[in-house]
Image 1 (cartoon, rainbow, N blue to C red):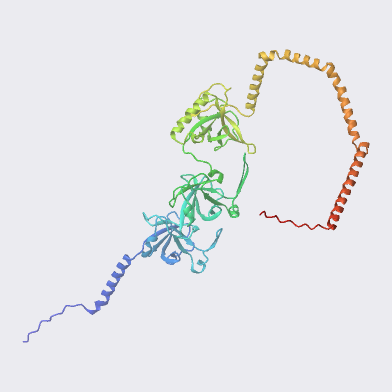
Image 2: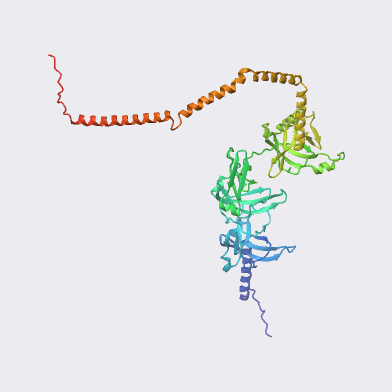
Length: 532
C-alpha cells in the first residue's frame, strides 16, 4: 500500500490585489492632499441671487479667479439668500474682517456704465480688501451696489456724520479747494447716534491733506447770507451745484493738526460759515420763561448778550410745565437755554461754569433780565436776549426743576408800553421840579425883553435902510449890464488895445528882418600880451 504525500500550500499576495490596493492608497492620498490644501470657506448674504449659479459663479480679485460658489440657498426667514463659497488656499489672506463683497454685473447709474464685460462672461462675485484681521467666522453681508473705489486703491477711508441727509448722496464728489480728491461711497442711518453716516474715500496722495484740524462742510448748490458787513454769496463748482458734494479744509486761524488713521470720524457742517465758528466743550443750562407768543423761537436759536451770541436755545419745556402741580392758568412758558462761558472769555473749563453761575446770580440782583427779540424780520424768527434793566424791581435767581431760572421782562408791544410809562414818569418828575415851577415867570420876562427890542427906534429904521442899500446895488449892477454906456466904453477900450498889440507885433517882425540884412563888423579878439 502506497503512502500519500502531504500537500503544502504556499502563502503569498495575489497579483489581483495590486491594482485595488494602489487605488485605495491613491484615494487616501487625494483625500489627505485635498484636506491639506483646501482653502477657507465663507458665507455671503445678498438680497437676491440674480446672476449667481452654484458650481459656476466665480469669486474674483483684480480679475483673477480666487474661488467659486458652492451653493446658493435661502436664509432662515426667506428674506434673502446665503451664498456659500470656497477660496483657494493661497488666497486665504484676502479674507479680512471688513472685506467687502458684491456681485459684478452690467449696471447703468449716475457714475456711468460699468460691468459690460459680464454680458458675455456672466456675473461674478468681486471683493475689495479690508484692513482688520478676521476675528470670527467668515460671514459677510454683500453690497447691493459696488463701491465706487477700485479694490486695493491707495488712499484713506473715513466716516463723516451729519444731522440730516441734506443734498449729499452716494457718488458725490469730495473736494479740496474745489478740486475733486475723493467721493462718497455709501450712506446709512445710524440708529444709535440718530445721525446720517457717510463712508468717504480720499484718493492718494490727497489723503495726506487729512489731519485732526480738518473740517468738512456741505458744498452743494450755493449760499447767500446778509449781515452787517454786507451780502456774502458763495457757490460751488458746476458739478456740485448739479449733483452735490462735500468740501474740506482747515479754517482760518486754526493750526494744522496731527495725521489721522483710517476710519476716523468727522462732523459734516451745513456750510462753510459754520466751520469758522469755534466750538466749546463746557456750558451751563438756565431756564427763562415768557408769557408771550413763542411762535418764532426754535431750538438752536441764539442766546445773546447785547448782540453778542453766548449760547443757544435747547428746547421749550412744555412737558415739564404741564407736569407742574402748582401751575396756574396763563403761566409763563419755560425755555431751556445753554450758555457757554468760553464765549464770555471765562475759559472753556468746568471752573468757568461755576464762575458763570456766580456772575449770572450777581447780575440778576443788579437788573439782569431775559427778553425775546426779533432775529429776522423776514422769517419772523426770535432769539433770547440778555441785558440789564436797572428800573426793574429787585429779583433773585430762581429755580425750575433742577435748573436755575433767570427772570424775564416783556418785549414787543408790552416793552413799548413800559418805555412810554417810564418816559411819562420822568416827564412828570420834571414838571414837578423847582425849575419847572419858575419856568412861566422866566418865559414871561424873556417875552417882555424881546418886545422892547423890537419896538425900539433903531429896529424900526432897519427896513428903510435895507431898502435904500438894495436900490443903490441895483443901480450899480444896471450900469454894468450889456448895451449900457459903461459896458460900451469898456468894449471899445479893449478893441483899441487889441489893435495896438497887433501893431507892436508887426514892428517886432520888421526889426528882426532889418538886423539880418545889415553887414556884420569883423572884430578880431586880441591876444593877451605877455609881460616880460
